[in-house]
Image 1 (cartoon, rainbow, N blue to C red):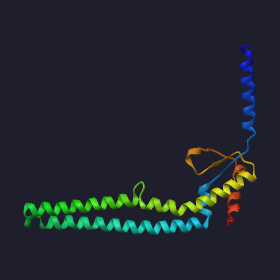
Image 2 (image 1 turned 120 degrees about the horizontal axis):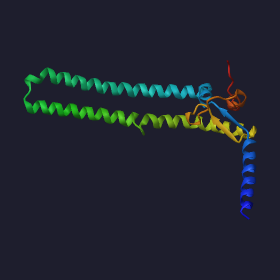
Image 3 (image 1 turned 30 degrees about the horizontal axis):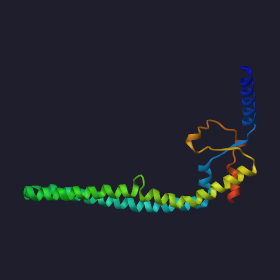
Image 4 (image 1 turned 90 degrees about the horizontal axis):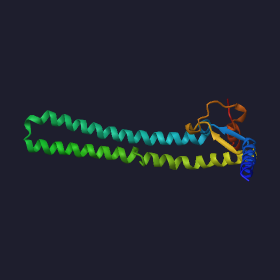
Length: 176
């Protein structure tokens, strides 16, 4: 009686392990796919323009703060203590505005990352749909992303690389 559940568990384990080893798998390199996609270059250029404009604005604020400090230092001997403290408070207020600007633009949920997500979403959807079609067409049970560090693929056989199939599905030709 005691051996019966063990035998059933052993048979079940063998059945499951046989099924898992028969599963077909492959991988793609989404970084490679993105770099080949013409829309990605457009998104990157637009993000660079926005980033550069916002960085210039942040640098302008920093420069203004430095000028305020320089001016305060130069006029320090001419100012009363009350005037000096008022100017110092103005500088501190400007510094806080600069920090708030940087946080609002480049912070965790900042405008830069929101814009990046907004611009990348249609492209990611296209790539995901192509991945889905390639996986189904090739009867893949598992498809890894070589570019994602979480998968930790140390070595892979190039015959399991489906990146070119995804590029073909997207209608992108590799000119190399």
